[in-house]
Image 1: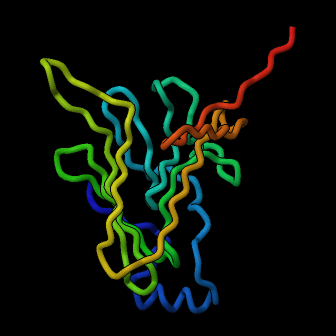
Image 2 (image 1 turned 90 degrees about the vertical axis):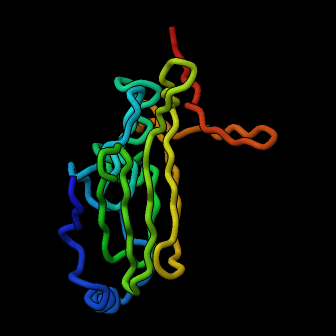
Length: 185
């Protein structure tokens, strides 16, 4: 897949600054509209869809045919499940695959030209005469220009978005589990 830019992106950083000034606002942009312009990461045990702004918008765990943990692709809105990494005063995005790999790179820039790069992949490795495919998504964020402000939001959902997770804390870890369901009869 070749490098692509969002169709709503300004032509350059000066154009983005003019747009932000005309809006009279700074801050984090609302999520992009759902689109099938997504990148796929996976390791033969699971897969996830990453939109052009670097949000994980679809991922079923622990199996391909399971309940989606991230469902913003089909269920946008406040209660959508997604894992987003947003840049303040968003202006432009670029997304591509590293050649001959399933490693997806997304660059986000603000109107001042500051930027970050998000590297997404699902690890798969060979050891002890077999392939290991852990249920693990790696998302590496690094600055590439300036010191932009970012917001990381992890919002898993269960039961097709009908249930928010219950946070369980123990010693040094925090995990999210599905809320218990009651059954009558």
